[in-house]
Amino acid sequence: MLTRTSPFVFTTGARSPGLVVLYCAACPMLFWLFHGTAANVLATVLLLALFAAALWLLAQGQRICEAYDTAEIARRPRLPRKIIGSGLIGLLVTFLASAQMDGILSAMGVGLLATMLAVAAFGLDPMSDKGTDDPEILLRHRAAEMTDAADRSLARLVSDVTKLDDEDLIRSTDAARRSMMTLVRALAGNPAALRGLRKPLVKVLELALDEGALLVDAWDGPHRDQARIRYVTRLGALTRAFELRARQRALVRHDAFGLETDLLIERMNRETAA
Image (cartoon, rainbow, N blue to C red; front, side):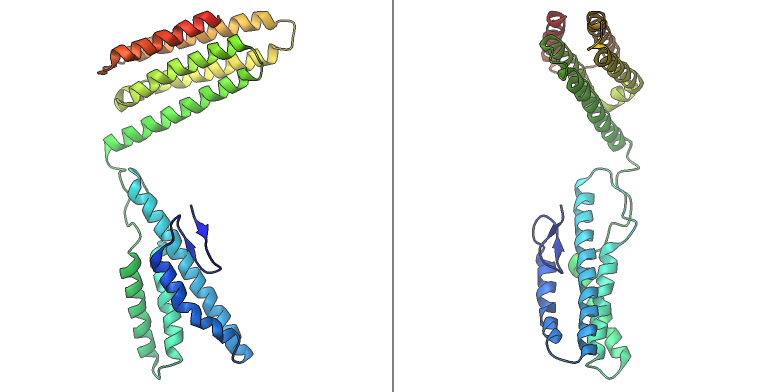
């Protein structure tokens, strides 16, 4: 997360020593705001704005690089922020050097050196995509996405039923959620098997959410009891169908006994609530 630490310095969660050094190096420019003509003050403000933009781009580039390094799959940034920030540092140095040197070429040489030093200090932006050509990494990434999506959908179903303030329905729905997520997380260890279960999983989640919506709609009407029975029956049938389909994916685990125990407990909770 980016944290604003001063008007001109933006760093990642921990303070970046390189950016702090750059900020301190530019502090003497602030004295120009109190001494000199109006033109000098305006030039100083413009140079400080250029410097602030350079530091912001460098900090953004560092944050993106950190995320790129820790991710298994990442796209290269469209905008090379660290390179542009280093270029702005060189441009700033060129302006400052031109006021002290006779030839523009000498000032440009100093600016180019400053750009190279900034690149050496902060590095380059990622130049290529990462992990997009590795099938195993892609499978794991998609399995994690499927697991998160399933968990969010089932948590939404539990939340909707919880609003009805019926302890048996809440317990039954939560048991169904835990049962399905136990299987999904177990299959996540075998991404290829989970990929084959994607369409059935999506269908089961859609039907379960539809049943929850029908139950909520009928809760305050005269057909509450029928809607309640239908919901419990359909949810149990969907959960059992999903368990059967998941077992057909030939799940093999070293702790298969523990998995079966968990599923049995959740099934007993559903049947007790029903």
